[in-house]
Length: 161
Image 1 (cartoon, rainbow, N blue to C red):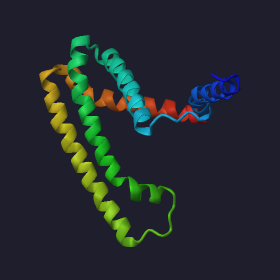
Image 2: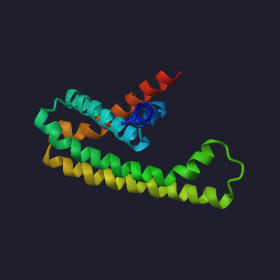
Image 3: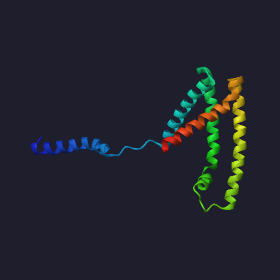
Image 4: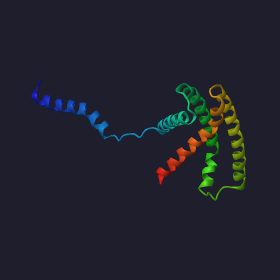
């Protein structure tokens, strides 16, 4: 083979081999998907909640492992209810002056319905907890769950300020 052809071919082959690696090195890192971040955050909160419930209600690991899927399902359904109120609720909190009287009345009605549905959900799931807990721990369960949420959000608010 002619020496004058070898050098350009080697140069071209080298540039072809190195081009993909240099292109990928220049691409910025993609941020993690928001839903993945939310899922990881939700799992951390659930782990903290389990530890809190075990401590406050003196639960065994087996009791906590049986109870947490039930409470997680309740939280997921409750979160779904909250999401229904979010669009108008956000506008209201931000002081949106374009909200009509009809939208506010609708929001008010949905809020009342939300409280009824949330109470029905809690009743259903806390009654299901009877198969796992009894006595004092069963009675204290709703209060302890609300106390965890209160403490978590207080701590979260303090970190923001």
